[in-house]
Image 1 (cartoon, rainbow, N blue to C red):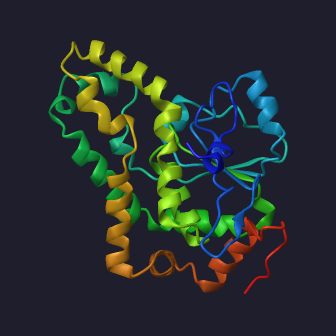
Image 2: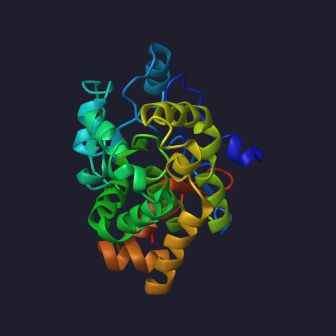
Image 3: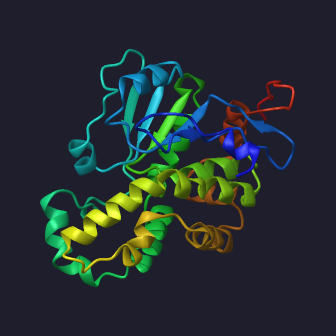
Amino acid sequence: MNTELAQKIMQFDRAINFREVGRLMTADGLMMKPGKLFRSDDLSHLSKRDQTRFSELDIKLIFDLRTEKERKSKPHQILGKSGIRIVHIPMQDEKHVFTGMELLRFLFGDLRKMDFDTFKRQFYHSMAHERINQIGQILTLLTDRNNLPAVIHCTSGMDRTGFISAIIQLLVGVPYQTVLSEYLLSNGLLQKRMQRLGKYIKWLSLFQLTPERLRPIFEVRSEYLNEIFDGILQKYGSIEKYVSAANNFNKNAIANLKQLLCEDKQGGTLSVI
């Protein structure tokens, strides 16, 4: 891992995929500001030390990308904290979420026959093309300086959070290969947790579902992000035209987002176009 990416990782006891969306260089020589935008796995079981660390970040807004089922299963510990607003913007259809007895039922039914790689690719396609209004909501809220610093999170902080973070980084001008490298950081940070989950599901399914079959669910892959952004470029020509056409997020809004999230190398403020 290079030094630039290593500096993005925050040390939490129980939010193990918590890191900066920023601290990345753009193609035109700017730097995404540190301390303005973060990404994470779910925040439902922070330790006391985590909560202290979190409070030091002066977070104003939390984007919760989970479904209602997920939120009820693992409610926020942040609720009630002074000055923090939580907005629920689900990036996944409720019917694709399995918790508790639902998961157990599917382990012995349809889930055993599922092609998880195909499922993952379809999931990314759904986010990009069926959740465009939600993407627009997130981007619009980020153009209000009163909402920063902010955190974006889902359950594991891999796919939904990874996709939204990639869109933001690309919009402000971070090169695609840098965005892809940052996206793939989740694999190392979540490896031990996903290995434990894989073993648990293997035993629960009476060895009918192996960690190898489930691997697409437990990791992010470059081809998932490549495929969806290749499709966006083919259809729209650029990420800027995608958000403008799909979400009515125009050139001025993009410039405002860049002004809020980026600075020159000396830490100077950019002017809004």
